Length: 397
Image (tube, one colour):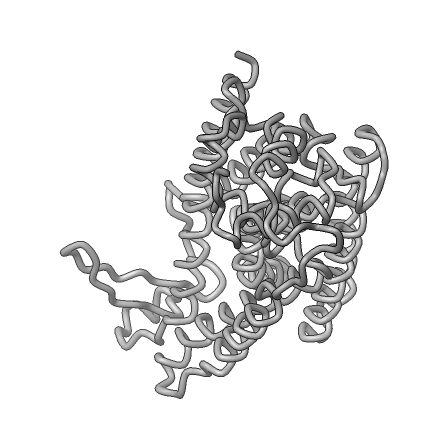
């Protein structure tokens, strides 16, 4: 019953997290598009009101004409919509999900003794420190380059992400490391909203209401953080989705895999952001950024492709089913049985082993994703037995 309730909590938190993340990313992508697609108004009345850009759009059978003011409107409207709960809700649901799955079950999902042998307490503390320390280091870079080269700031942030990826993969189970890196970047995105973007907007409004000149520093800093959030988005999504794909987080040199995937996402996003403005200016869209990103993914696919392995030493040419069943009973059926059929897979009876032979071969032999974090200590020789039995036809005899 406890496992059943935990699965319900996991499902509901994951569902809520995806819903609010879609709302946040959707509004973020829309405003990036809007900001890059605005054209100077031709209406003298709009210019008189201080409108610096407008867009005509059609959607759902209706026509829309959003305006952007140069600085701020001369008179604030009575009702002003704020975009921040999407960000905060994404962080809160994501952190709760990470707690339930990785922190609450640290010995199973967070720790892999083959990577780093330590106990749950220090591992949990270190995982939480990743969220805080990365934000502090990132924030220091942004403050340092507040009015300096944003390209240099971006390069330092990229180097910081790469270092954090290496360290996470050197300390935690690959699956947890990838999610942790995505989580620390997502937490930083939300922190940008909480500590800089929204407070800056509140200060601007307060200055306007007091009849004071608006300090342009607030807009400049909010813009810096918003741009970073935009380029973080696809790398974060890639890191989060990677936990479903053992060929990524379980690869040798997995931190390099993570950095390449995230770099590809950032490059692809660069092309789409540039596309919006290029269309307005009548210029060529710089698709070469997306091209490089796709080339990185294609190269990664070739690199990670499963390699043919020589038969393990000392293993008969055609292992018997009894040998395979003995290995499965010791290494696999602890989590795949009538009482605990993880992923709907049972491996506690001969007919079940035969029915799931392909899945077992792919997950335990080709990808080496199972057992999770090799909790049952299956050996390469045992994987070799399963490989040869399967490749010989997976016979029950």
